[in-house]
Amino acid sequence: MTERNLRLCPNGRVICGITLLLSLILSPGLAGAVDVIANKNVSVNSISLASARAIFGMRQVKWPDGTPIRVFVLPDNHVLHGAVCKERLNIFPYQLRQSWDRLVYSGMAQAPSEAMSEEELLNKVAVTPGAIGYVRKVKANDPVKILNVE
Amino acid sequence: MLNKWGLCVFLWAAFLSLPANAQELAEGIQAHGFLSQSVVRTTDNNVGGNSDDELAWDLRELGVNLSWRPNPDWLISGQALARWAGDTDEGELRLDYGFVDRALYNRGEAQIGVRLGKVKNPYGFFNTTRDVAQTRPSIIMPQSIYLDQVRNFFLAAPGISLYGNADSDQGALSWQVSSIQPEVDDVDLEYMTFLRDLPGKFAGRNSWLGQVMLDRDGGRWRMGVSLGEMNMRYQPGRSPPLDLLGGTHRLPTWVLSVQHNSEDWTYTAEYAQTQVIARDYGATFEDNTIESGYLQATRRFANSWQGYLRYDVLYLDRNDRDGIRFASSLPGAPAHSRFAKDWVVGVRRDMDRLALSAEVHRVDGTAWLARVDNPAAGLVRNWDMLLLQAAWRF
Image 1 (cartoon, each protein chain N blue to C red):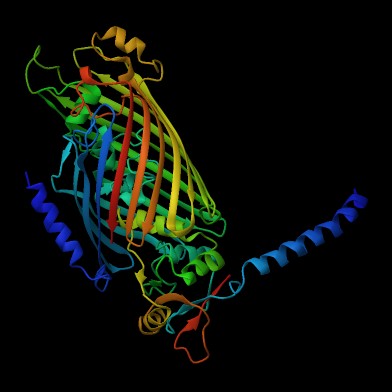
Image 2 (image 1 turned 180 degrees about the vertical axis):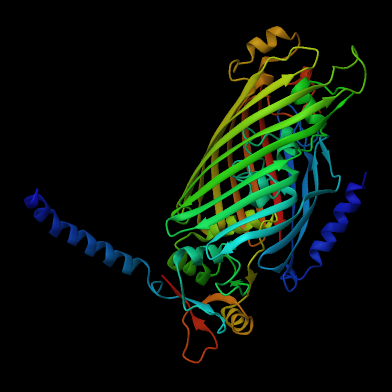
């Protein structure tokens, strides 16, 4: 048994390495390319994956301190929207759309607010209390905070 | 009745005059809506008007909703709907849903709440938004599970619902249980249960419906169970022999729903059984079980194109699937009116808020055709259908 494991291990590492290499080649510029941001008055600095999905899925509507959450997103076909879904939320963009539509057209929740550009989204998150959104990369003097999704 | 064309033109104009981001009317207040128009042509039988060898234009949906969230624990929502479907639905404007939602527990990723008013009934994957074209898996719903003839009965009803959501890193669980008084003032339902339009009418009785839905791994797997018992009473309009005596119908029902989602593919399967138990009519109705299910594969292509293939089966009596026993006991009633096997292939293209679709059906059986549009004598067992649809939402 031990011997078999020993023999399998190096192979496993090679496969692992190839997969990693392939994923780096196949997704240029995507990994780490999007930051989840929040208004500066939001009282938390990190949220769980479950919470991020619940927030962007419009099910969780308030922060732990009771402040209403305002969700800002880019249009469905925006490259950054695809990136935040896949990279941060681990969900396909079409599924997020389906789940919003199910809630919005049965009256069970409200839709996120849509910004037309990354710049508009950043500005809205900066001026709206309780706001959450995402941008390509937060710059040092941007008037928002980064939320770690763990 | 409202002038359907006038209403249609008015709402079209209202939609088109809205700026692109008019969904947000004020702090916490949103408006959304949808609109669709389909064209149908069939080789035989009628769907959405007179479609038999001609183009029928009578499939149309129009809805507008408003919601107000004054604070995170309260939500007030309502939607107006007008729908046209042949002679079964003629564009009468109605309240689709309207309720107050109060969160009782609302902390982090978990919520429990109560909804009071007219609430949409979760039943299978698609029931709550079945009139919104973009949310459907095809132009017309899989009739096995989402039978249009009993649509109003199952769609939404006044009552009270308790619901909950819980998200964890592994998945999301949501559930709703409703105690409702179903709305059953539909001629379709009388054709479905009595095979004709009788002088009296149905009234809803206390019923309940519940659903549990589990989304695993960000929705890669979705699994649900819907369960309930729908009840109604028939109130005769005349004395026998012109009418039946009053009686009750109980419909215990369940649906199993499974879906797998990947980047390019979605596979969906649903299976349902509904018992039909009639009592006290002064005539004997044999209890029966409706059995139905479908399998659909949807493939997403580049540029927001998608294609789908579905096989959909409905048996109105699972102990008489070919309808032969039914036909031999009722002279003039075709056996093929007790089943329908429907192959569907379709394409759809989404362009922002607009979706264009086309689909072709090859159907063996006539069980789900609306009797108001299709007298039994004219039913043809094997028929094909082409549907085109344009749908818009905001």
